[in-house]
Image (cartoon, rainbow, N blue to C red):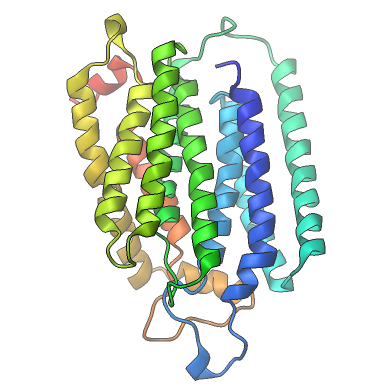
Length: 336
């Protein structure tokens, strides 16, 4: 897909702006005013951190799309994401706030993104061409489909994120903006993984984007505690759409029973992976509490848990990628 590069870089740039705004505008809203025990925050108190981490994850996903799934782009993109998380913790500890801080962080983020993208472009041009122009290798197609799966599961997490009071208008704004960005990444990566960009696939991509955005709105409209079924339905629509866009159509038609099986996996799989990842993390791996301490924020009270739902979503997305990132018929035959 020729437009993959500009679209991927544009979505990465949008993620940088969202990260900067989340750090300076939403994060201060989640931090308690005093250190007293009765004021300690509860479950999901640091929702702004999770939205910000998902924006950071969107940066390497955009670079993977811009690199059309090539390893020389994907590897550095993952490293950049990890370094950005570390930098985020340091910035969070400094408690930036206000428009000036937003602009400063955005400019710094764009500078880093620009340097990395320029280096990757130079590296790509310096490397010898090993494929015909206009074709996407099988390995790159799997990477792009996997990136679409990760973005799809993160969409569910962003759409369903909650807070202790569940009344902040800023939470709805942040959840909708982050989920919309991730929908664009999921659809864009899936379309880039397709063997050919036909009118049918482009039309499907447009329809899937509209349906997924409506689904995100429906999830946010549901009352907290009643979002599980809408989230599962959103996951089924979005991830099944990813397979329809990215997988081969032998003879010009999808293999419908393959996609029917994918729809079942897409309906059940994200919830299973999210729960299977969240429970051990709450009981055995206090990663969220470690990030809270490193950022200098108040700990969650002992009756609740400090769960890093963005990390849970990332791991669940990788699990779904292992099942669905099989765009060729030969890839799917290996599951038999």
